[in-house]
Image (cartoon, rainbow, N blue to C red; front, side, top):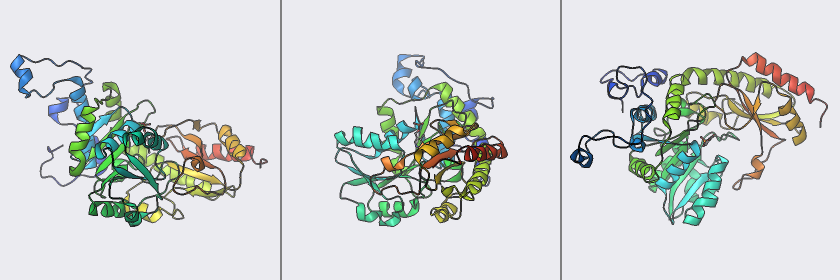
Length: 394
Ligand SMILES: *Cc1c(COP(=O)(O)O)cnc(C)c1O
């Protein structure tokens, strides 16, 4: 935790991004920490090794590189502590295993990142952990779904495919009455725009692969926890032997320093392009809580201080074939998984094949766009061209 700022007034998030995790005890006189590649750590004597007083004991258990990122994220999340995982999916798995044991029940938002659903249904179910899925708009009524063995609620707000906001404070208040832990996937907003723990979550999970890494060259996950869950998160992470590679940690830390400017550009271009799309007659809806017309707009305004450039577009009455041709006609949008890098991306999303709590109903196919750091006028021209090239299709 960064204590070096002493009694000075609290600094704003963009400033904190440039300073967090930079204690002299970690980085020495350098601006950035060394990239330490290490397994073995040497001791001066057997007694030193047995004494447990040495700061570094084994590569997996801590290096200056690892400490710099853990400390930075814990400070930004306002957490007791943070652990680093080899991917965002693994971070979610770590959070779930920390909060749940055999015989427990977990409530999961129906818009959850799909691989987490597979983890629950295929791998954790046989271990005796039962997951049921809830309507993302449930808010405080989640109480009605609590069972005697419910131990955790998993939220993702907004969902990264369908963008429904969840009322996390209302869900957390209901959960707290029953000592149920709340895990929040905070990948979309990042700690810069949403303080998951301050809004009642016990654990914040982030895929740093996305915005924090920011350059499509790193896989890394973060789990940060408040008081109620930190010991369990730390223990689970340690018992599973998880660690991230030093180069990936370094690149994530490097990305973190420029997160505020990248996110600002992506969000501003995203909003402009989302409004342009919302005005097209081919578009039935744009799924983006930043827009006043979005059902999640009030919650987004209330709880978050900003956005990113990831949103969905529902095309009015188009065939899936036309949506595919539209994506194929784009030249500045890559076709591929992930988001949060400098380059724009487009994918065809099929939530109707995933949902179990509430069937997905839409006026046509859903395309998810990620708006990167290109000039938004070029992106609009590219989208306009794709509309023109597919204009005669059904
Ligand atoms: C990508 C993603 C994950 C998983 O992260 P990886 O680093 O790809 O394993 C989890 N949650 C959300 C919302 C994501 O977008």
